[in-house]
Image 1 (cartoon, protein in one colour):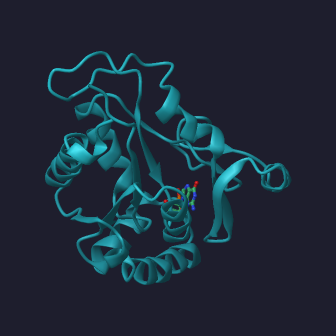
Image 2 (image 1 turned 90 degrees about the vertical axis):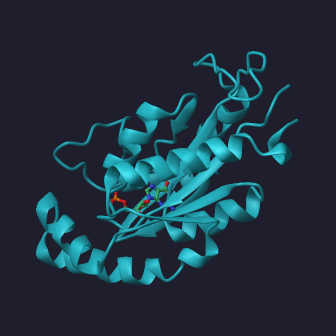
Length: 209
Ligand code: 5GP
């Protein structure tokens, strides 16, 4: 028995704690990959090219748009972010990791599930193309905590923090468009919730082929 490679869309306002959350989930879930987006924003201190993002120049990004290399792209906080079509293929090909099906002790399954971490605009575009995508919104516990996290990160100027906070407030109002919502007030609990959603979706009969 086989199942299709699942596509998870995850949106979280800046400072909702998504980076640490993913690290935990990736450690605890087999056969899943997080798509690495392209962006023209500068890397933060602890970020690595090709791991956190593919960091490219604005002109290069615009060339890629022209060549139709992105399945979706959006401007967020004044920077461009995009998901390359190439990244989505992994879920069909699954070439580099021998995946084990979690289902019914099943046969070898060479497909992978994929997580896209994208903003609300990107989520809307992907949902239109991939109707079976599963969307999850990560909420910060409170706006105050969000502000503290952005400040503690020390990566952005006060002006940038305010811009991100305002955008976060707007983004949060879209959580009802998503299939699931997780409040990240406790990282271990949130990671367990995200893991449970992934595992439950893997076992849904409608995802079997
Ligand atoms: P940050 O600069 O904090 O890493 O990300 C800013 C926002 O851009 C976040 O909401 C993040 O999810 C979003 N983002 C990252 N990659 C993509 C992408 O490929 N497409 C879209 N639409 N948004 C993205």
